[in-house]
Amino acid sequence: MGRAYQNRKESIAKTATAKSKVYSKYGREIYVVAKSGGTDPDANLSLRGLIDRARKDQVPAHVIANALEKASGVGGEDYVPARYEGFGPGNCMVIVECLTDNANRTIGDVRNCFTKSKAKLGAPGSVSHMFDHCAIFGFAGDDEDSVLEALMEADVDVTDVECENGNITVFAPHTEYAKTKQALLDAFPNIEFAVDEIQFVPQTSMEIPADDLPMMERLLTMLEDCDDVQQVYHNAVF
Image 1 (cartoon, rainbow, N blue to C red):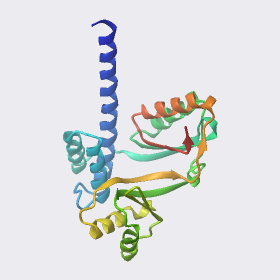
Image 2 (tube, helix red, strand yellow):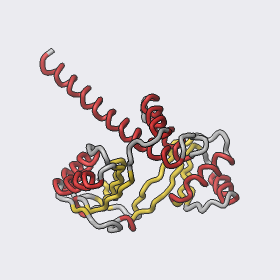
Image 3 (cartoon, rainbow, N blue to C red):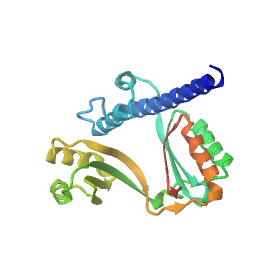
Image 4 (cartoon, rainbow, N blue to C red):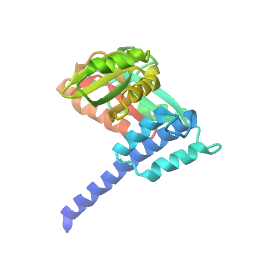
């Protein structure tokens, strides 16, 4: 077996660790969304979308069920959202979204990631004004006019509807997430969402200089390894 076996074993271990982190992040987010909006996916559209994404990412059913069971009980962890903003290598803009039960630990971990990758943590609002906080829905289709008409009839404050290569993408303010999704479900009962998320979308992008690429990759890797970090958004183009 020798070294080849050892490499294979290490690869399997890394994959298992990566999956464990994905399951943990989904479990925590499902718990928080269910705790705040109810554990019934039919009544909590944010939860329904989150569970659908978890299933697409092959999160085991027992992870989802455990999170819902914890959310339906009394007490449990007291996770709160935390958002950190800063400037990465090459002066790109970075937003880090977290769920934490210990704000001091989380800010320390995030700051450490920035410091060790020669990046700089900024004040709240320092870069988020250069991103659009959007609800995004993507699905198969080619008739953007009918989609736009359905959204307007439902009085949805839609930002944009795009159609490309047989796929339609709807952008709306993040505050319109539930209203937009319900309008699409009502108008197109058989709709299947390929994308169903709330994201920070950069208004402008910037290409990272080659010399800064290793540090940018290090920043993203370190943030991904932080247990409290849920999502990282940036405007860098590699």
